[in-house]
Image (cartoon, rainbow, N blue to C red; front, side, top):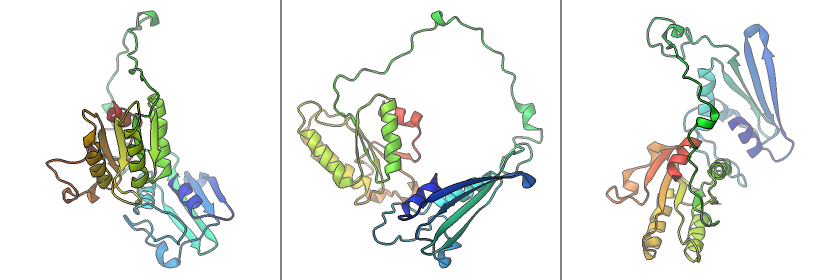
Length: 278
């Protein structure tokens, strides 16, 4: 998905093609992502898979990454016993091709750390099945609390539209109305508008990216907490989400009184989202 997303981002004319090939003689699967985009200069092609390496995009193309996407692709492919390479030409496009093994022997693979010298299969416990309970004897499934109004309870703030779409989908799965914002400025506008509402004057939860396009999530959180002082007994909880935990410094905020309630690393999976918004 990262390769396809990059191709679409940097391709204005033409298109993107994904090709899958079965390399039977080598027991490998090969996948190529081809685009007719802006291309990558030769000078940078040997460095794009390095951690935190990022090429400044041309004007008119918005790129909010931090240089981890291709690095993670390389590490994942390596973990699966394959390799990844790029062939690119400026103004003509790029082709990213990666391979991975069809089958992996987890007893012999270097990518797995064995717990002992014995084969892994011998370490698997014997599971005794529990007795079958008739369906009419199962206890009732606990239902989430019903929402008494239709106004949004959650605000999702991230300049990456794909991440926003995933988190909004999670909110729908949890039956929680939500708003979304792509920048700190837009988030503050929604929060101020919410304060004038005749129903719920504050969000209950805000999930906010640390590195936004116009300011940091911590700066937004500081503004929010200051403005909400006029609303007594609000229950707002702010969670900062980030893919660069090491970029957050205690110098960015007062550790004794942080403007947020928790920090969570990306990616946020559904179970973690439910834990945050409960």
